[in-house]
Length: 75
Image (cartoon, rainbow, N blue to C red):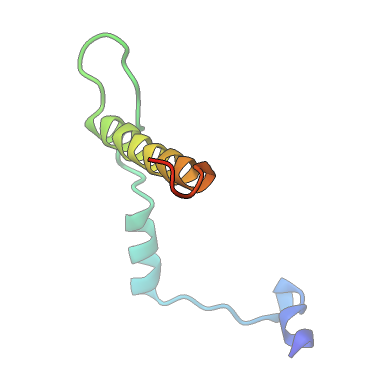
């Protein structure tokens, strides 16, 4: 089993169907504009959603960490 996983790429048969290739190319979003931040004006809504998501995750992590370090029985 280990020998199969360590074979050089040239000897392995990795084939991709046409539909799989097209689906992969579609997922890459090659024709989409890059995510950009404009400090003045209208920021990219995808960037705003990303920042909000990251903020919520950080707040949750901070809240959980504070709960773990708090002494039992303290209010």
